[in-house]
Image 1 (cartoon, rainbow, N blue to C red):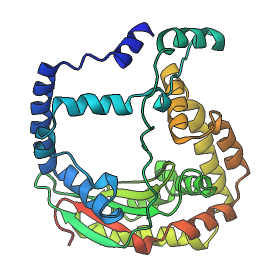
Image 2 (cartoon, rainbow, N blue to C red):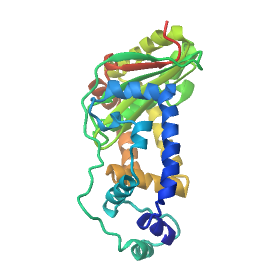
Image 3 (cartoon, rainbow, N blue to C red):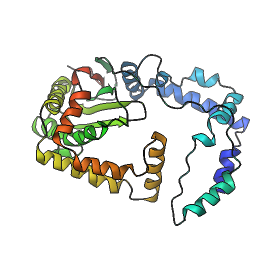
Image 4 (cartoon, one colour):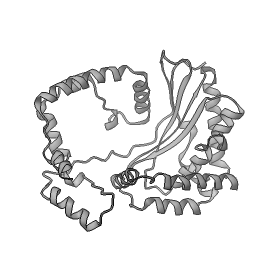
Length: 315
């Protein structure tokens, strides 16, 4: 704790090291800008978010090279501050003992100036679009279908959407997308779905790998699956299986001290209750097929997908 406090409150930030790291970062950023993976992510960002969104900014050799040593020192002083810090102590220690140690080494740390706003603004839903990012190293295509949802992590629909995601994916051949698109139709090599959410925004995406001639066929089947989620209740067996998948993941996510600490930090950053996994388990256990259908009908519209294909142009 003493070493952590010393590094946090009295960082060395040597000027000579700044010059070396600045040059290395500028060189790395040039390679990153030219990589197909970066171009794919950039295409998604441009299509999903407003042009003035903070996430539209990117590191370039020019922006890195323009920085001065004082810029870094001032930024550190402005943003590394106690009112933006969460400390989690995990181990064989009482709360009083932990508080005593933290206060001993961090008690003199004071914030100066107004607290910076570090929360991204809410954004509207996206318009549909499609792009191809060439990648000479690939003979198959990597496809991402993505939606910017008009909700956030605190929306009551977050939980039924996650449960529905586990009906669609997460269980390999036991779930719809993998079974229908890979096992039965043979259109994709892999397929996955995800829902991510923060304080102010949420994103839903489906990714898959396939031959160029199967990009549109696979997307058509994905859209059919999502239309079914919006209009028809999942079966009792699917609902039970999805609940089992989610509930089993919760204790596994806290199977180590590092995982427990990481969970506390993540929930604190978003503003969730520290016992959110327990509350989520109760929600999932009591959820109905109607809850899932209504959430998908409200938020997941496949006609609005942004599609980005990395690799050969789809045929």
